[in-house]
Image (cartoon, rainbow, N blue to C red; front, side):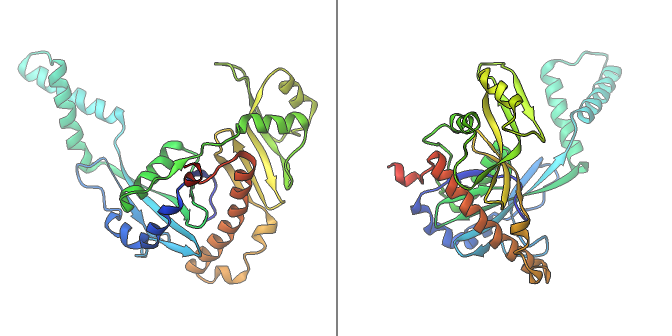
Length: 305
């Protein structure tokens, strides 16, 4: 269950107390099946799988939750075809044209008729909360999906003032400086990919894959004024990732030094494996998030009051 992407939020220390009752608060917000005329439903599901009841998995200060969704698949082409058939039938029977208002009403009727027969697509999004340091980490690179996860948690708790990252120092400027000067903070090493952009509107974009980042080719792009929007990095030879100027961590990979620590007992059961992987992942990410705070300045909200 290792996360692949990280969208980050921080919440104040005062919110940590509410997390102690997280299990009880989320119980009234479980995912329910999508009704016959509903387009989508959202709610919490067990991190342990479909058959389990527990909604929260805890390891120390870390609480893992999963937000489930059910979405009806109703393509616009199917709606358009059914609507065209209905309009043609009316025109043939009554010999009149359909106005815009009636067309809208007919479209709503078509959707209502099709919804009970539409396929349902289930999905799941994981997130964890660290009550000790105030991080909310969502396993997605999509800002909308991450905001939806925060909204779900907020609805469950009643109040949860988690805020997106607002760095004191510009990640784009700092990462561009790292690459220009060829010097990284202690513990970091270069990955093999980056995205460089001309900061002007509609400027040029260069994406490098499997590329030596300190090469003359990359330096020429930097000399022309391009800036770093994404940068491949490794931390302590344990984690590889691509860091964006939006501070979203993409393509997160745990390297062999981490995976070797799982041990054989982690595969005895699904629960044991989840427990071992979550404990190991949160330990490694605690170090990474601490470094992000150190490099860019990402204090908890209370620290700004």
